[in-house]
Image (cartoon, rainbow, N blue to C red; front, side, top):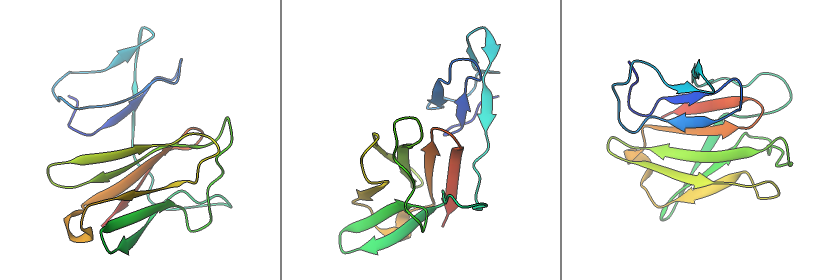
Length: 127
């Protein structure tokens, strides 16, 4: 059974979906079951992916990694999300942009922050 806010990826075409209405026994794309992505929470290697949260006067600034993540045509951060108990706020990014986003939500209301890398999949920082 799918659950709210889970993220799935098609291993064939690369389609990525987030569950907004739970309950389906499986998600299918290109005739195959989609792979449920389990967010990674610990950086390894040279590239850094775990979202870093900075509190600002009117909310938070989320940066991807403590070392800036590449934003190249084939390797970039597709989105950054801030999750509260009742909201998902998403900034969608493109190659060439900075791997960061500001959200007008108090730090105390945030349960988790996650991002999706086009090469290394889903990463999360639970607050």
